[in-house]
Length: 321
Image 1 (cartoon, rainbow, N blue to C red):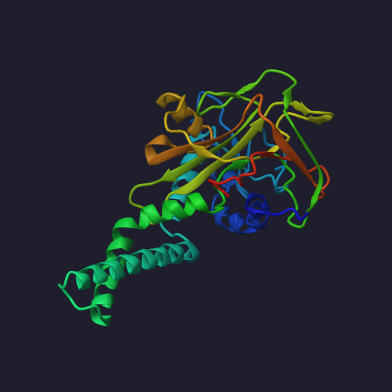
Image 2: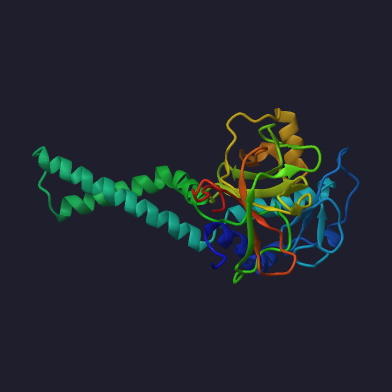
């Protein structure tokens, strides 16, 4: 069986997009900016200036091997990053702009043709090319003007867009890997369960996603965070260490977050994000205690963490997939 599918394409894209992300991040030079005197009273994370990996410590980046960390403790560095990302959002890539335009064209054409047919049936206007083109063009323009952010959001929810910040088990699965081993069973924790930050639910592991929409910029909503954590557990005779499994589970919106606003503000600030900048929608996937899952181990690279799937037979859908 070839290691593939939408979930694993998303994992593979993390590797392919590192060089592109590196060129975007090259405008910030932490050693040139200097730390500055102002620092948060609580600990924040380090963000790799090359690949976007988030870490609690600052050794060589476990993802790209570079040592180009932005210490998010310091306001000077966090504000420089904030300003750069705000400027980048003013210039969405052509690929994304054309996706939104084509979606607007398809929706507008459907509305225009439907409207022309309805008018023709009502005897108000003849069904012909002039009416089709006029109503279709008007509906397309109106759809793009009023609905492009909603269309962009829909594309982001369905697509596999790389978040600007991420933390997941390494190394990433190779693009040409196959399934070398699998096991199905109920994970048994080897210690205390975790608490999912957004929902407050007890779990063996969780994946967090944050979708950000800034008012007044050219981008549709974008993914700014993907983060995974898990406790140590056993499945039959297989041992999985803490933070050593990749979740391939459906990620869903958290409509009523467990976190109060001040806790959300601190959580985002620790990752170089600011609650006042716009709308942050929270998403979560949960590795539930007592549920049965399938673990799959990839053939390459050596030491790649297993990937855990639900056993319902339903393909995971949602953010990044």
